[in-house]
Structures are given as structure tokens and as C-alpha cells.
Image (tube, rainbow, N blue to C red; front, side, top):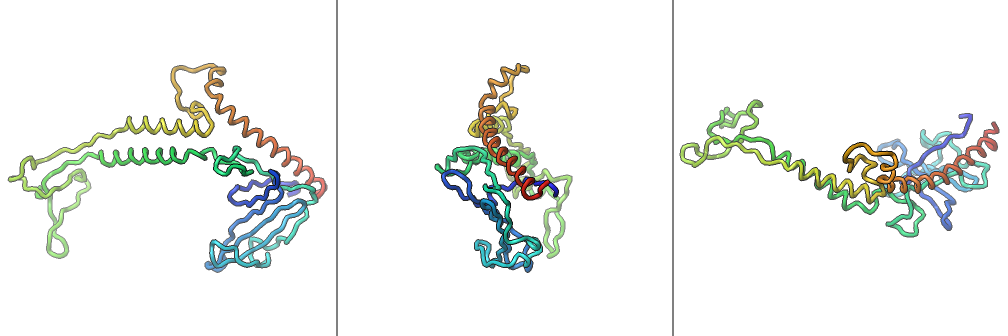
Length: 273
């Protein structure tokens, strides 16, 4: 392109290096298409102040880097140079954390997920939904009848088997004698589905998860009661969300300032437009 482009890389595909809280180098990596179906190919792109380095590695095992190959050995890295000069006196990569500080790795320069620390609530939410679906499965209507009341068909080995009729799928056969057994006639079975109890527990868990993540439940359409409220009242109820939003905006503000400066410098020094 005749102008500089911004590329977004996810944190799980980058290996950052911090010194005194400052990002000084980053190595990005990605898996390439295997040429033989047996080996793993990876492209490493290392960014340092003023330079970008490319490397291609081939390995027989997934958890090892392997040995280095020329970039021309793979079609996805063919045409790349081993080293590029950015002409910048600073790193051309900027890290924007989602939220700080990191509660799991204290002292780390990396941010953390909104759901960090609420994994147990997420497990409970999954368990509540699983219990609801189990109630739905158990609550299917069934008509229980003695096995002898159902039609039989001849099997391939001369025996007999119960015939399947899709219009009679609600019948459930039991091995009981309809003459000698007590209450062996037609029995209707319909278990209660505890929908309201499950949904109340699910809503409570979702509200706790949203609140622990730093947001007001009202921002997600939860706890909305009564008639429409004024803008001031909504702002008061959603104050927690606005505080979290302001903190994240500050992280992005610092990153965007650096990105904008980098784009202007690359446009002037390399593209000379």
C-alpha cells in the first residue's frame, strides 16, 4: 500500500519483553501450512527498536521450535527478507492492555481478562444451564405400558423384537404382566421442569459475573425494572460501567498516541509521501 497500515495481533501469538515496565521487543509467531503433513512450520517475526527480523523454523514435534530454514523454503514466507530497517529510534509495536493490574501475576506488565477471578462463577453458570437442560430431558412426557401391549416384528434370527413406530414414540415398555401385576395398565409420566428456579439462579450468577468483571448489570439489560428513567438516573445506576470504560479508554489513549506517531514517521521516512 502507498500508506502505512496498522495490524492487530492477539496477545497469545506474541512474546513480549519488558524492561522497567517498558516494552522493548516483541516476537510474533504463527503456524504455517505443513508441506508434508508430518512436520510443523512456524514463522517468527521479531520487532526491536529500528529493526524487524524474520525466521522460518521446522520441527518434528509440536512442542519444540526445531531448526531454522531459509525463508524461501516455504511459500508463505517466500519473498520476505531476513531483516528490515524501520528507520525509527523506537519500537514500532504498542501494547494496549485490557485491564490492569494483573491479579493472577502480580507485578506483571500484562493486562488481564475481564473474566479473571470469576472462573468459579462461570463454572457454576455452566452447571446451572446443564441442570436446566437435564430437567428438560427428564421432563419429556412418556406413556408407560406393559411390553406385551406393543406390536412385535420378526427379527432376522427368528426371534421377535418390538417394532418402531415414529407416531408412537411416547410409549415406554416395561416387562410386566398386565393381568397379574397391580397397576400395570397405561401410566402417564410427566416430571416437573423447574424452569423458574433455574432461570432465577442463572440470572443471579450472570449478574454476579458482570459485576465482578467491573460492569453494572444494567449495561447488559439486567435488573431493568419499572418505567423508563432519565439519563441522569441511568448514569448513576451504570456508574460502575463508566468507571471501567474510562480506565480502558486511558489505556487506548496512550496506545493510539504512539500508533499515530509511528504511522506518520513511517510515512515520512520510508514511504516518503
